[in-house]
Length: 140
Image 1 (cartoon, helix red, strand yellow):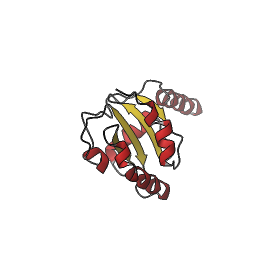
Image 2: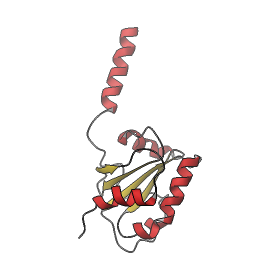
Image 3: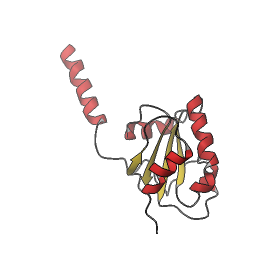
Image 4: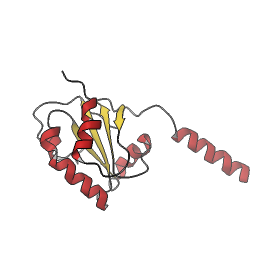
């Protein structure tokens, strides 16, 4: 019995640790109904997604959401902000696919959903987001 349990845990961990990034889960062509105001009012179509993993009931997540809302003018036309919430059952697959284990987490992905860069979990200032994520986007 113990041998079977260890085997199942090993199979689960190996499948969860796959290096292949999800490409169908988050895409530019299928925006979520929960996108932030900056994404909805964006005049230009962005080739990049700023994926924001959030628990809407958590204090740090609410703080990070306020910072992203204040950055909306900086984000317009550069990235499409896509919140992924713990309260939306359909979003849980996205949490698992990217291996998100702590919140809030912000990552930058291309239009196909492939991860480009990620900030460590926690609340980050607007300058940090600009310096570490938005500078990864090539200028046209």
